[in-house]
Length: 636
Image 1 (tube, helix red, strand yellow):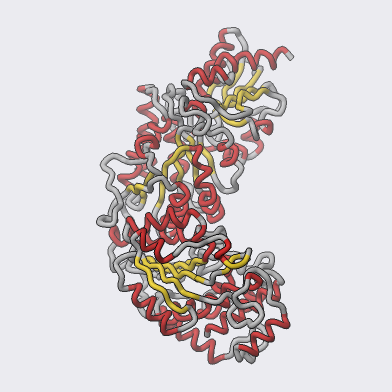
Image 2 (spheres, helix red, strand yellow; image 1 turned 135 degrees about the vertical axis):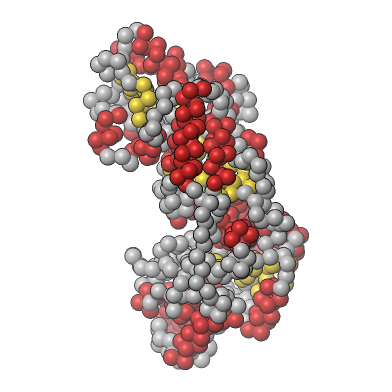
């Protein structure tokens, strides 16, 4: 059975002339024992809520997982195996969630799978507490290689797993001592089991090619009351007398001549892609064993009252238009979270040690801890990278996840955020202190290029509301999106209410709308987002007194606005009116597309350390500057 996995990998990589055969050859024994003796799964109901999860953090060895899915009876044919890495196939170069049935998460960037698996394991603890441990008593298994454990995210996430005592998590470490550049000792001298033991994990070592040792180690791991790391000593490229235990086995086809030599060495008498009936029968028996604990399960969440949540946010809009408060949009978001989370049973928020700054902690919050998984708030610590990946895992496990950090630290969670966009996961990142408006902390903490970076990410929606009304509308839109992540960029400084007349329509939902309309023939347009919208309104008011007719367009989401049809976009930004002034206290990058002949009151370098009001004056981003910019355009 293990050799069948090895040769499917060898043959598929050879046929594609691309891929990583060494890891599947080395981990085939571990995978065979795991799926034959321990895994609970059902290929005919691949989304069974109480299934065990199998995740390959070392996703370059994807052919191991594709071989398993094929042999166990998932919807993955032999032709799919033969089309490995080909356009449109179900077997891309790295496992992709939503693309291939049976793949639990997209992996490839090393360490991401481990951190995501920790999120999945945590989600199952939370779901079991909320809906019954009889429905969620599963185990999450994740394979990792040396590279996964070199990445810093492995440290961040492993410590969280220990603190939350995830005893439903077992890490299978493919300890082959090889990386792309050669033996791992040229870059790493870490005692891995000692390192994980220092976090508070249970650890054990075993021979990754001795089936009895593998079985005993996994059986022991399942009895522990802590997360477990099993260090399996393996041989990369197992079975190849020429390539075994060398970096050459890692990322290149072995070639036809070497494939024949391996067949001879392992007594495998069958041609490429042929699996004999008796071995297929053994895998069918493994699949039958996997279904031994299967019961059809549905999860009913009657408390998840989205319509009521949307109505509650409408009430915030009405009250704001009447009361006209001045508050930061981070506070505004906190007010929204307070009315959202009591009705969203499977929503969990958190922060990277910035709880008081991000306002992501709801009233009457309950922390998720090792002693109480029935909470709605996670203290991630200063670990943005792991937080993003764990949020992905929580979402894959049935939780709607919200996190908080400073916008400038989107750099730290960027890889995880990118994967959430690639997978279409509706995680929500609350990113506060979103401009030079944070003031004295200076350029290290003032995000400049980050909005452009987020807006450039496919399938991610970036929102930058201007007041509490827009913030509530952004939250309404975000909650109704189920196939993409969202980033909320929110101010530290207080802002005036600019939406002083209530609108039943969600004006922010289309990304941009006319906030102030011209009172005569249109002479120019101000485009602004977030904390700079009120500056554009100030310029509008000043020009109105001078009998100059402009309009203010608020763009809470530039990408959403650009996705609207031409008729809507042209109704907001008439093509014939190119006198346009952009006001945003962030990078100018990207704004020329909306104001090709206009003026950009943006930033062309980094910020500085000073009170916020002084910085806006220093960089020429004030209502007076906006008014003068429009006058200059009209003069030419």
